[in-house]
Length: 200
Image (tube, rainbow, N blue to C red; front, side, top):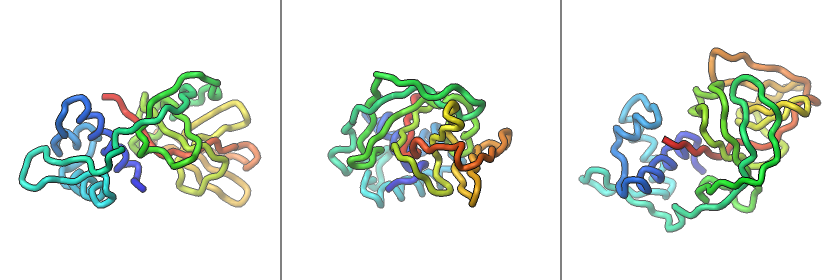
C-alpha cells in the first residue's frame, strides 16, 4: 500500500519513462511534484523501492528499473466528469467515457471511477486543479480519508472527512477555505481517494 505522495511520485516516474524512455533525475522529480528538497525525494524513492515497485541501480545516473512486470498494465474505468475542490459545482453527471488507469492504483476486485478536479481547496494535499482523481466506490469512510461527498443530494465535493457524534466535517487543505459542518443525514459518501493522475 502506497501513500498518496508515493503514488504521485511513482505515477510521475511511469509517465516520464513512457515519454522519454529513461527515468527522471531526482531534481526533475522534486520540481515536478513541488517537493522541497532532494533528500525528501530520496526518502520517497526508498519507500517505493521497499514496497517492491522499483529497484535502484547503484552508481549510475537515472538508474532504476521497474520490479513488477505488470507495472505498466492498465484498466479502463469510468470517468464521471468534474468535481469541486473549491466552490460548489453541480452533482456528478452520468458519463459513458472511460480513462485508462494503471493497475497499481486500483484495489483488487473493487469498483472505481475517476473525476477531474476543479479548484484548489485540496492543494496542500498535493491535489491540484485539472488533476484526475481515482476513487474507490464505497459508502463509508473513517476520519482522515479524502472523500467524494454528496451534500443534500445536489452538490458533490472532494474534501477530507471527519466524523463526530452528531455531525460530519468536510475539511479543505487550503487555508483560504473554511471547514464545512453538516448533520450526518445531509452527507452521503460516494467513495474514497486511492490515486491521482496528473498530466504535465
